[in-house]
Length: 111
Image (cartoon, rainbow, N blue to C red; front, top):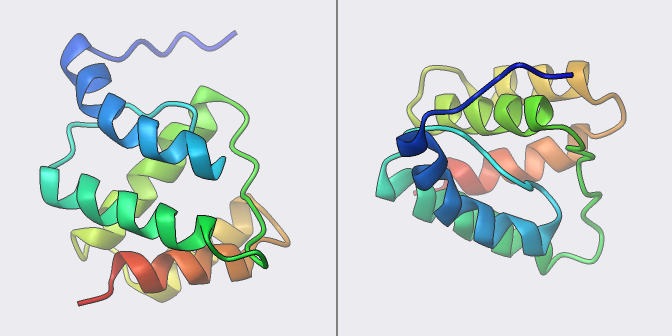
């Protein structure tokens, strides 16, 4: 059992991203104080990959998985990690999903 409990503020901030992500099958929930700019970028990235019939959905089945994914995406967006690090971290956590992380990285870092 996961003992992680997000604060109400973090849960509320995650609600916006969650709504868009559910449609793409990427996130069922996230827990982060994200900026509106990041939320918009992630929503846009999710919409883009959702429209791609060749995109392989990353299996984020637990809240810990979703939290990890969201934090990695936020670090990439804030330039705390490179695209290469993001993809490598994703491929390490989810072998066989390197192309999925690459597609997301391209969208998250798009100008």
